[in-house]
Image (cartoon, rainbow, N blue to C red; front, side):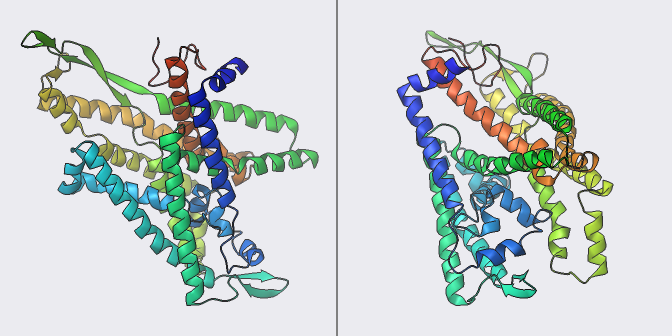
Length: 445
């Protein structure tokens, strides 16, 4: 393995790309610790201690802890992700966006431009909302109530608006620079590095528990073994595909023969990726988020108990939502009608299946069957951290690395980045990391 890493730095282009990517990620982490002007950091830290079971906790995870500290990158890259999701959903129902998707490079450039405009608009709304929310926050320190914003008003809102929107646009630009000049997908790497940044504190906390005899070394070994098993299953879920064979008929044009080759349609077990968990978590966190504004309501406190991590109803409802959103997002991301039409136009057919309507039904049937086990396992991966918290008395910070959004993002981004590194190595006749691996997109020379 040491030889493999040495080969990476023997290739000048790959070395420059990796060093450039690492430099950008360091800038992202530095920006996540630059505070926004006009905020009392001590009061803010005391006021946001109960963010975990709310939408703010989910947002803070994607922002790498920057939202909880109200720093320059407090909004993170989420406004860009939200704009991208909105554009993707609109491309299914709005004819204008459907035409843009079919216009090739020019259409993609226009969609990217609209996504950037949407990012500025969404980040502006969110930044103003954050400013209003911060002005209303207070912290109980030394028996008194201290406001988070000592001098609220129009000037503070303007400063927060400029700071957070600029930070989001800067992060979006950094992500695009990584994609263009670095290695891996820039936006995904920024999200992943924000999640991984919490790992050192988790490790230090676990070491402290062992030193204080709160948890034994054997328990830590069991947890480490569980993590390896879960990561292995998540890798299988991410890489698992059902290949549908496709044959293209031969066509003679002049003196040349086109077609005649055999290929396949890779039907992923988890076509929706991490999006079902994000959608489901957003809905599951809504009751707890609303309840934070109604501390004296007995009804809302009862809702909080039902929608807490340790309640069986939370696990069941959360899993059902994930299964539903997996089918919903898969239906948006993969269109059997379009695939069948493109195959028919280019003379392709599935052996034993007639082109056209029958091909569409065949692909849709396989997609439905493949998505079912994928959605069930995705639900299990999302619920497993909460089960672990109740069965082995594990804190949320550590349990989040045993499944859910965090683990799926880390594994997915790591595999994608590793695939790109493998491609650079193999193109220059170096051995890759895994001689017997089945990384998607890997070729043998």
